Length: 253
Image (cartoon, rainbow, N blue to C red; front, side, top):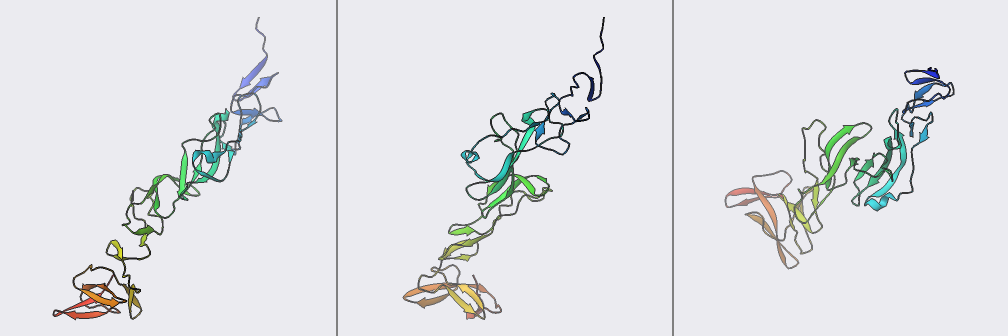
């Protein structure tokens, strides 16, 4: 003989034990309700209860990045059924200063894992591999720029990959020449060592270089040194204009 012990309808069980499916919990009205409708850091394995996402005493600096802020048990997807559905939101920076958000699931020991959402790049780097956009524009990584010449340093981050794919790996970090060097074209070359390294004309300054970089060039003697200012063909406003061999040249960098 069969004995009816309860009735089950959808995600609400009727009977003596009121057991809900995994992903649901039993509220005060004996109703089976979705575990975390607002992405709370809880999960429901099917025992009628909501359980908090786990926390650990992990030192996350051991993984080679510097912890900034955030928490391990930050949230879980709606209807989470196990602790492995729990997610962290922890912000880190690398040793250069680039920053990312770790948004990884619990792995049984801690929340360390491969999902890193990069959002900030320091001078000399750019964000690469567009992922998605929310409050930030998130990327899969950062890449180091290689466009600066010798004797130069980067002054800002480069152009990030465009969300629509129109720009990828621009590798265009702005750069400036190191102290003692001046920009001649796309190179950083030594400035004059005689105690002066600029010549000024009507508010415009032009580098004085230790060596010849144009022909002709303007030669300047100072402090026992002979140095050179680059010249370009033609006349220019607020520059030093020189007539040489029947042609006009003007000072330039």
